[in-house]
Length: 614
Picture 1 (cartoon, rainbow, N blue to C red):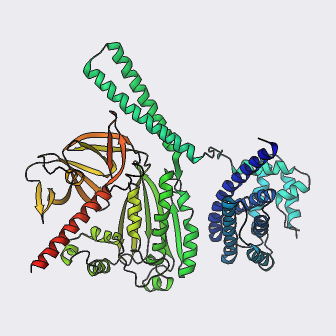
Picture 2: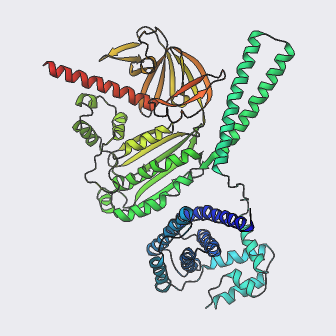
Picture 3: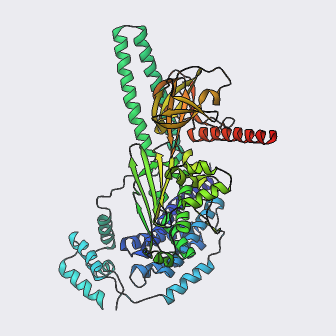
């Protein structure tokens, strides 16, 4: 490779690094702008300023002149905010967000085409206008001045007497910071002041992370998956050796190595799984800006409370969770929380509340999304279901309150009186539920009409490796995700009944619909007697899966079925057991949906036949 080609590769590497770093910085900046609009935090303001300054400097070095000019004007405006000469009211926040949104688009331009395609002149002009019209002569808070000075004294860079002189000089019509004056007076070097600030801000927060290519992580996860399969095979071989006999020393050695490989594999598996975990704050960080913009659009006043941003979830789940979360929040703001005047008439606080909380519960992550808005009008939901012919009046009357709540997840159901760009709580909620169930998760909804609504999402920590119940139907083995299994029932006489030509399980005076694995996945019509029913819980739905026998619990590595088999209904993937046999993993929500559709089709056919005969 010649020198010119080498230089080109090196420059592209710098640009790629700039794109990655700048994208991350802009996401944080936008989040922090929304935060300082509510409460001006000096540390956040300084963080925003440093981020924009960094992007400006690197963009200038790389020759991206439009991005540099835009970042420069944004930096000028932030400089006034930083010095206390301008407050971040809604107008200032709006223009800064507009500028940073454009910067994000320009960085994306560079990523996809290597050049800036957007015109920034109007936004730069707007920023320049703010620099002239919004400037206010406000001194930095005295408390903050003292805080910076005290930090320099603690580091033994200046004395108390020298600090007093500096503060006096700062108070006579200068706008310079304490650190700047200290350097000008040659009481300390610029490097000493910067190092002091860095030490104070990073005390106890040493960098513990590095940026890793996602492909490398995925490769590592695949290797761990293979190692888990090898561990399962070794455990089986060890078991067979004990049954078939052998020398004591051989058996002892085999037992030792099996135990060792099992221990190492488990540790490696946990380590890699932890490496894939990402704070859920990555999803939550987009919400404050979205709520702010929607409140402006719908003339609403909402306080957003977010807890548990540090809760971690597998990277693949984080990516899949973004769209459902955005949809839920949009519905809460548009359809849930009322406008201030309406809330006041109801005796509520004019300011609504939207609370989002994430926390761990065993091997699951729970996310609660709560709003103190209109709640759900159950009668309106039932009327809409009846109007669409989805359920009869008798069926609706037999539903419990919780079951009726979950009717909002029916595809295409909406009780909204008017359609907006965001629309009613019912529109798209079936997509939310479907996407969550694809992640082996569950979604529940609860509400008190006129008072509040809470939607709860329950997700596994990871999708790569999970515990499953291995069952047998005919000669085929299937794996059922253990997080959905609530009970195992051995079939006895009297437990099975027929209701409207559909087989059900009667357990503790509760009627549970049944899905027979043999009828669903086998062509054989001969039925075996006995067996088990695996009771599964998906949201508020309870279903029994009829199987011939239960093999036991195993840790399974989920493998995709590939391009030609990926659309098989009721199957989410496959795994390989210790004996090398491939078994299918059941997609329980899909199995239930497929089973219900079959029943509906049968009922419709029967109704048409009866009508024709009459």
